[in-house]
Length: 267
Length: 256
Image 1 (tube, rainbow over the protein chains, first blue to last red):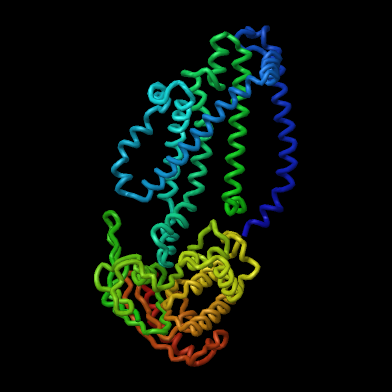
Image 2 (image 1 turned 90 degrees about the horizontal axis):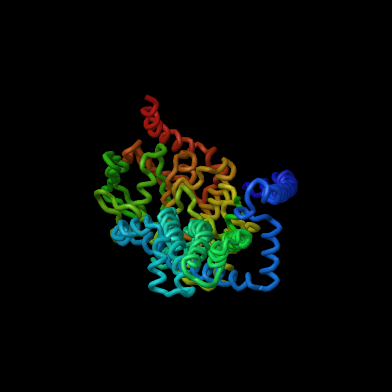
């Protein structure tokens, strides 16, 4: 239907708009760096905001001696593992409760209470349970992801078009077939929406865990730099964390586009 | 084949009660094509849903081949008014869906689906997604899927309502040919009187909600029918006029 128009019409204005926009965005970035550098030590004490040259030097130094990669790897590891564990449990829980009215109603008040609880407050408990090592960071990331993915998957299962389910049942689909071939694929875009919003939360969980008790990872590094009154170091780590977050979002986008080709075409 | 024994259906929504179907008592023979006609929203779809076992009647019973329908009736192919193709599947995978559910191996599935796809004129669109098709093509895909499911009874809910007049004729022709080949029993719900007389052996005129059978008319036009020209015969006009005389009463009241 609309496929042809979408390929033809917006192509030209969008593309030229896109290129010039990238130029504007780059210009804005450079301008901010200049203002930052200019303000530092003149308008605001260098102690509070450091300056781009020092931050850049710190990044270069860490990159050259390789220390940043060790911290980066620990954070990425905790984030990804926490994300995976939280996503699997959240999706499974969402599908299960989405299908079972009884279980959903039974667990409703408890899940609401747990969801309302700031999960970050669980961090000390996880340190007690899982120790000072990476496991407590994975657990914190997983819990943050779990609820987001669960709520989205649950909503997705509840939203399934009953006509599609009835149609499949009339064509002699078994209960399992209805779940695997209708309900799960239909809820997939909701699940992805959940995965997508939870990626930054996995990172938050991992970094926060590292800030609370750790001797490795970006969270540790930001905490350590702060404790040393090393503002340039803090800014340097923040930049690394921001880049990591953007990279993770990009990966989720790529996976989603691959798995939901039918939806991509319709956009 | 299908016995509707004094079935009624009343829906309770919050504090509202809606009586959709009242005391319909009809028998449909094997290989018969029956058209149910009546104003939009009169409860015709509810009738099909009860035969498909998706709703239970409030009173009375649906008997299918001697057995009361109490659960989803998997002996019927049901083509709903809104197409229920799976949007994440291609046309071929949608049409082959009933075979996939039955555990038919992939190469055979593909071969059989492609044969039906050619039959309904969807060749060249096998790998498209459903939203890339026009309304008429989606209807044809639903029809193809129902054919592949191979049910002995077809329930069709305003199957061609969204199509233009010419395409409708093409689809009527296709439907009659395929039904004759497969020996299917067909219950067709429509609000198009021309369509009802063209296709059916018997037409039931329904009243406005709650749906009751107001008139039952046998259509003795000989088969195979030429859907293009049958409408210009005097017999056709006779049936059309007598049915319209009854049907228009249902619309007259609506104008008040």
